[in-house]
Image (cartoon, rainbow, N blue to C red; front, side, top):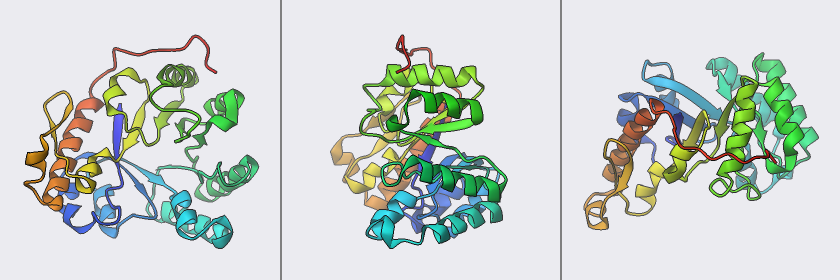
Length: 261
């Protein structure tokens, strides 16, 4: 499984992580909203195992005060230009199911695909239903499951595994967005996930160590002995090591529901 470390360029963590990022090999997912120019150097280097670009449209909408406050056509045009100019291969559609009708999301997706000459990674939500999932598996090589309150990422592991097995039968890969339940990572069949749990050490005093098989949280007294910059750099490096370990590990435990939906 490929674990994409997300939000490396997020606000507050930018400059002092540059050296750690440039000198290490891993998978990264970044929102275009938080993307930093120096991240392009890493993408073009041999240390980039692969890179996924998120549109960041949901974040941008809420930061702007609502969907009616933004020029969505310009936003999509800028997104397309970034993809084309930087030769980005893996990128998500405009994930706006909770704000606009699905038909509108499909229109945005069509525009992006026509102007990049590449397929997006469409993002499935529970509201799209089983038939739409099957359609996505037929039409795309890589699809994603979005963060959706109706479809809890932990309790619905059997459902997700059933969905993933179906996708694999159609030669389609599955990415799980925002997978923070790392303790369950050996129970899922996803081809890739992304997580920004590595950042928690800066938000709250937490220090993580990779022990060769798993991520272990250190006692708080050790965590508070480092300032947040040192803590964040340390945690990122430990998560890079953990992600690279998971890349070469095949899951032997999984749970599957008898019915997909």
